[in-house]
Amino acid sequence: MKIGVSIAALALGMASATVIAGDKGHDQSKEGGCDGFGPQTPRDIDSAAGENKRVFGIAPPASQMNLCNIHFHKNAEHKATAFNIYAGEGDGHGYNSGYQCRISKQLTLAELAPTKEKICDSKHGDLKPGDTIEVHWVHTSADVKPGASLGSCLDDATGNPALRVETQVFTLVNDPNALDFNELDYEGDVVNGYHQAKALPTGTGAPVEFLGSTTGPKYSGEKCSPLQVTWSVRPQCAKVDINSVGEWCKGNAFDEDHAHGVRKLVVNPKLLSTIK
Image (tube, rainbow, N blue to C red):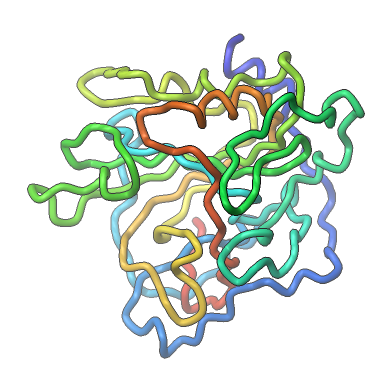
């Protein structure tokens, strides 16, 4: 299956903006708790406004950097018109919060059929058809090989490497004709001297690029991330076969076997960069 064609065929067209009832999960980080920090992530990519004055250079294209990690979060950390269904306040540790794809409410009974086994099961639960995940392909300017956690993106020889995260939000469907997640994996691929995924998602809209930070539930409330990251977030959802995600969780180069929690949306303009 060709990646560009498959995602283009499955991508959700941008729906009209909708106010989602109960959406109060925004991270109202107190300015004083993040004094001196650069722009934070995640954010609403439909809003370009931001007032953070810390500026750093845009990272090179992913093709000129080393892929260092792939992981995913249960529900989208970012928000856009195509993924703006609020999942709720969650458990206080980043789970059962974030945003869901609008297309996830428009699936067929066949796409929602239960899987034969639990998918990417953990103490926080497993994945089911109809769920939303946000996948991060993390790239670094450091001379490293792909591995587990963000630590694999850093090394002693590069004190402050450029970091780039290519991002795609997916709806999980029980359909072997949907995108195969393993076609977006890393299997030792080196292109022009750089570690690369077999492919990155295409056909889901021009990525929104902005300056931000690392994410994850460890950064919440008054705690901010110090790392500087260039984000590239695709604005539309795509469908991916949940069984292929399950196979990936059984074995990959990143020791990933479950979905991570989400950091609440950052809305304080003093903690956001301007999207140009």
